[in-house]
Image: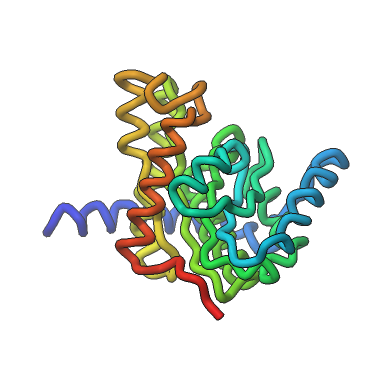
Length: 235
């Protein structure tokens, strides 16, 4: 039996055991707001959706929020509608998505960065992946004419145990997205290598990228768009 199928079935059975024991209580009602200040910030972000329609959207937590618009313009010819809010977990991001009129942005594609802050909770990798997959379905329903791309979850520099779980989640995303109409943007291996050899090469701190890190992320996104021939404007 090939290594791929051995890996596939081992992950699949872990998924099933976790799903039966924990995910039975998980459904589409997992969306959660935060506090009033966060609600005001969320509203400000959402107001950008009606400005200059036709731009891509980047959606997520602080890793989305910190992406310099100047780099987006340099690499993609336009800035993105940035719907990033710091410290958001998947539940918070999707609560915002449910409030936004995303479709009016007429985005050719939506690039999603989420999951990092769920690794600050007791959520196991299998549950985080389950939430991400369900979340991508919600995003697609809200913007059916946009291509959806999801980033691998970034490693945390110097945190071996957490990175083992993040790697496990990314491997599961890779497997289960093969049957989904969404594209995985690969970044983990290069970022992990930077963490191991020279964190300052691509990282600003333990979790967040620096400018070179975002340039690398942009190239990874460009590669995914080219390979899948997606992300073009639609009528």
